[in-house]
Length: 489
Image (cartoon, rainbow, N blue to C red; front, side):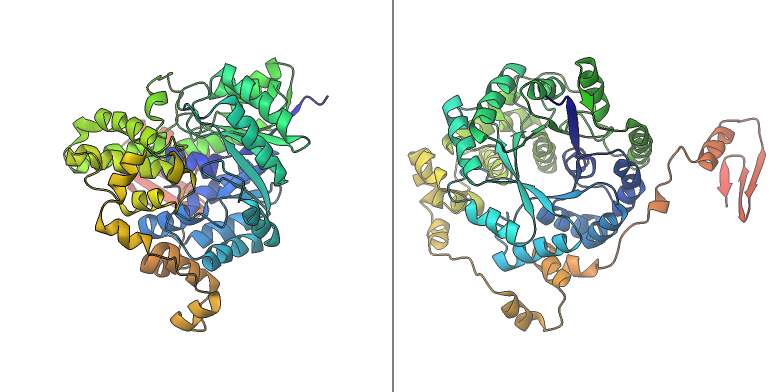
């Protein structure tokens, strides 16, 4: 039996999303990617379609397709991965546009995605995998862990068999909420392995409860040999465990981690410098918090909830909102707290607290949930009194009659002009007019010099010498003159 353990790196995708709220700019990624690419990873998760497109266009002022194209051209040794599929867009984007986006990604040489069915209901998921396969994309299918009265061993055995019946390329045992304990990792990993036959397994865990670095080791002991990790400062916290910690512990257990850590230490230093320069979070190991099991709100969503309450002058009601999220989740039929279901639970909980009357105000997405737009389980599993209250309003009757428009690409081009490019179509649907304004814009890696750069280190050390009144440094055509704390170049 092989002792080799291979790694899928999540630094610029899930680390970026979980800890930096997707605030990594193209230049930051380009400055780091060569070192990540040199480490010998099995793959690197790289691009999350809808949410990253909207974030980069509307908040960073950058073209997400520059991230995609420049990064794909730079990664020469390691396969890059998409994260997400074609169906299930949070904003109900037309299927033709979602498929077009996947085709654009595939055209850049990306041939693998990891995707989910948020209820773990794989009975009707076959067409999604078939569509991805038709686009040239092989699927790593997530089997998501959750805690509730209905998420029993029998549940996981059934859902693992459903997933395996679809014959995905791989199955990923995913702990999105950081809820697994070592004991449950052993139990559920063993169940899944026994149910999926020869389909290879991956393990993806978030570090919310501080146990993910230990759970990784238990997953490996149960025969899962593809592990997801991240590079600090984008490891730990609500992200994945650190590659350095996991690799060291695996060696101590007699396994052989297939990774070169030398370039990753360079990447870690560069990312840490960027984090400090731009006031971005640095992931740190978290203490165990049993309260996480009551509400199961993902870490990234917690920060957003706190921010929204702060804007309303109600940050002191944050803990009350988390408690309410636990009640709402139970009433919604115990959805797994993963996108988009976690957003529906958290938003409704916030409304209930802010308005001080439960379900008086209900967002459109929760009405859609109760009507079955986001899966069939809410229709049967939701508390029926709560469901009736949600649907007893004029807005619900409007949604009951709604059918999502599904224009073809030909119809979209007739509407916006025959010469509109594929990228313009995607940007218009996912990011609106903001998307069109940023086409072609991105940041440069030169803007994110590492502190390891010799000149940067020299200047840094000279600045510390307070007794020097005038410093002049010249290197070829570059000269730097410093006068009593001022800098001229």
